[in-house]
Image 1 (cartoon, rainbow, N blue to C red):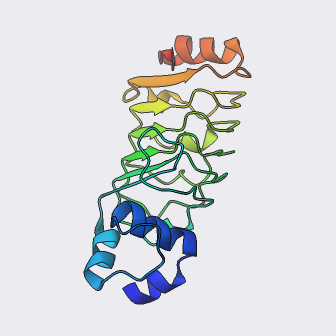
Image 2 (cartoon, helix red, strand yellow):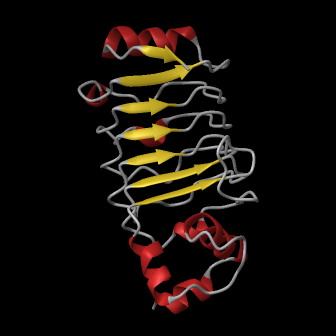
Length: 193
């Protein structure tokens, strides 16, 4: 099963796992069975592109396809890439922390089923709305400044008990009335990043 999984990966993901997780450099060689088991069972994975402050990849990823069968992840860091969209992450049932800063994301679509998610950083992207977080009521730390947000629809009264850190500014297209509504009606302070 692991061999078939590895063989089905795109070359960029074979290189990413070898370089960032196994420390073998950006090569496509198939790891040992033990190394593949290590990847598959990892509770935390980090893929920081070459422009990141502390990169562990020498190239930028263009999609999230390599993560499609990894369900044990609790913390996922994918920063400074050219991804555009997250894709369906619903198989990551244990995911509690997701960091997708500087990935050119246009949407948060794909996170709607991540009920355990309590930390989400999506700063410096091209995201227009935060509606996909509507059912993610365990979020305690949500940061998304420097996007193209035009509305705070998605934040509901069900977020009020857990949301401790809500960083939504600056977002130049975000109307003051939306900020005031969230702060006054829900009691969630919109902080500046």
